Length: 213
Ligand code: OGA
Ligand code: NI
Image (cartoon, rainbow, N blue to C red; front, side):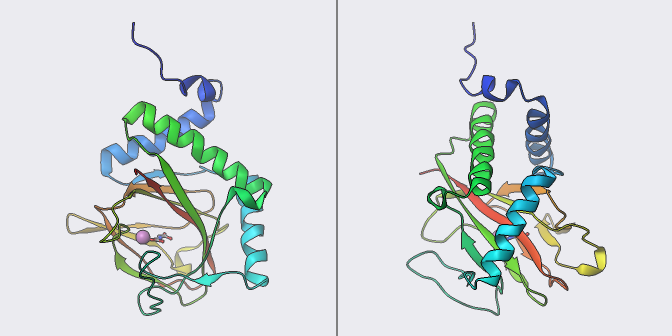
């Protein structure tokens, strides 16, 4: 008899969650870019967006660098978003709900796809009007621990004219993904070059990486 991975019972009684995870994983397997609409519930998305707006008002967001901890380059000609790292120690119920969801997703991914993920990191990101992130890969040259990128958007009523699309380059083609509320995108950090096109409106997300140490 094949043993059932320990995680499956945890979400086995949550068919909707399992369906959303499968949507993300299946599209990732088919196209190297996983996309799931409504990965976040409207309610959780609204609370996380409130958190991000408060951080912005309180001036706690910092310009993001483009290197890792030992080599942070604040180069606004490459990226002009502002970020704030999520942490369970903040004891924020919505951040923790987000982490719980990521824990479930990682367990599901590891048990169904043998990804061997051992950790993750996530930050809020705010692109003010006129901001962008030029074409890049998400893996650092001197640290390969980031294996998968996952971005979840917090923007209601996003219109095409608002810009700010995630543009993923693959096989000479560019795939444009609009940053719509609750949508998650998942891809391999070392493989796919991508960019964030100039946004005409404040653009909010939670961006992170699943790691193998
Ligand atoms: C990043 C990134 C994409 C997005 O932060 O590395 O590529 O759509 N973000 O926000
Ligand atoms: Ni990126």
